[in-house]
Image (cartoon, rainbow, N blue to C red; front, side, top):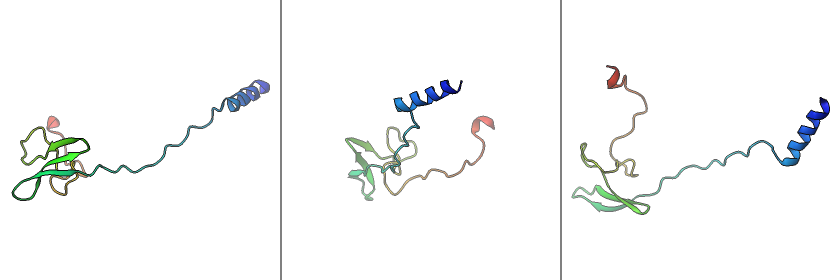
Length: 91
């Protein structure tokens, strides 16, 4: 039995089956938005991120737009750092 385990260990080392490589730790850096269009107040209404141009959400009911904070702008809604309570489906 001892010889079988020794042979298996030697085969494993010969095949290079060792511990998996550790992943590189790179910090994610969001792409910088380029303001394409502004309104009369100077707020960005359209931004270009990479090759795509997005409308910036200006009203609560607006569809097909990007949240200003998600677009890299310094204004707009902030994500909550806590859960405020039960979901509406449980009330």
